[in-house]
Amino acid sequence: MHAFVVGVAHYPYVGKGLGTGPARRLLDDLGQVTVPEPSAREIAEWLLTAPRQPDDPPIGTVEVLISAPHPVKVRASGGAPVEVESAVHENFRAAFRRWLRRCEASRDNVAIFYFCGHGWRHGDQLLLLEDLGEDPELVLANSVDLGVLRARMHLTGPRLQAYFVDACREVPMDLTLSGSRPRALVDVPEPDGPLHPVDAPVFFSTAMGHSAFGDGGAATPYTEGVIAALEGLGACRKGGQWAVTTSSLAAHLQNIIDWNQVGEGNQEVRIEGQWAGRGVLHSLAGAPMVPFRIGCSPPGTPLPERVTARAMISPSPVSSVQVFEANQGHLSAGFYEIDVAYPPDSRFTGDTILWQIDPPNEVLSLTVRSRLPDRS
Image (tube, rainbow, N blue to C red; front, side, top):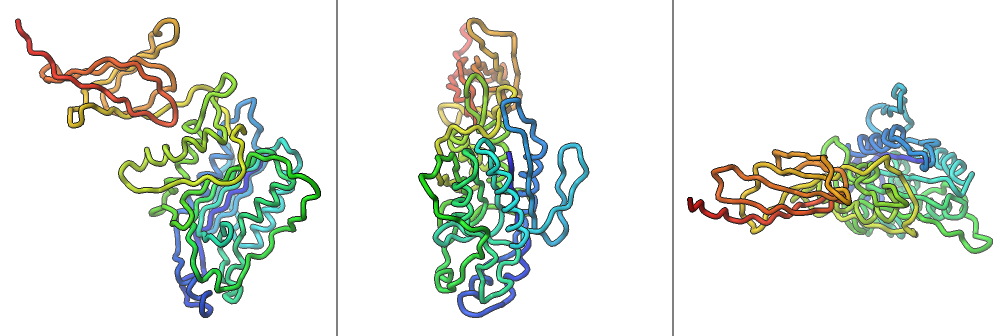
């Protein structure tokens, strides 16, 4: 597995009144952002430290570029933090070529690309690098056309590729008026025959024409969701074990983000690109731990005082019993008998239920009844 991780949290040429006409309006519409630094660092460190199972391709290399107002260091497994280069166009172009060369060494490699920073939509997705607007007359020169990058990877890259883009996808009218284009990263030759099939989804953090989400100096909800999904909440059963595939990640990522942002917003993940859904991005050593919450019916009935979960393994229950005195927690994926308890003086009681706990999360829906009066 070869990864390329980019975060841009420093744009020295935006909001300075540089240039004229469309270029000036484009640059002045952008502001400084803080979330790409922690987001890219967390992704890079997860890739460098996450345990890999015997069936997984080992981590080969992780190219990291992060721009911030200060030097940025990334910690690898068992090593001292390493300072990384900034995400200016020259560095991006060199790192992309190194990544491409490593990826295309074998069709059996796995290619991972992650970007967090400003973005626009202009034909395809544009990724805006630190030195955007260095020359206002060529305002888009220091941006990256994701479509061109992906086209080059499709020609000679691995069968399995995954792209994660945490950036705005708004479509400013001034992009068309500016007449500027991104500088070339690499030549994209005409194919000399049919393209080989690839499993290469693009996981966008937001819908086309919309802004991305992020607040403060912490990693974005999208990035936290991607990491949680890769760690196991995006997994499915595959060949007798749990694994995160491109299709299971696609099915679960939105639910993971929604679960962590209850009542907070309407971030909508969009998945594009060419993908078959069978590629394995990460295998697990065992069943994932799945978050759950308790829900009661009818609405308005009180939550129980205690929840007991008994693991069931055919043909008989095992002795594994977990007791929760809160109305949320984590259970290993599997089949459970769920029992609830109310205080002795409560007029409510609940039925025992059987429930299959599966990733990415579960709401255990309890039917609550009024306790029959004591007739003794």
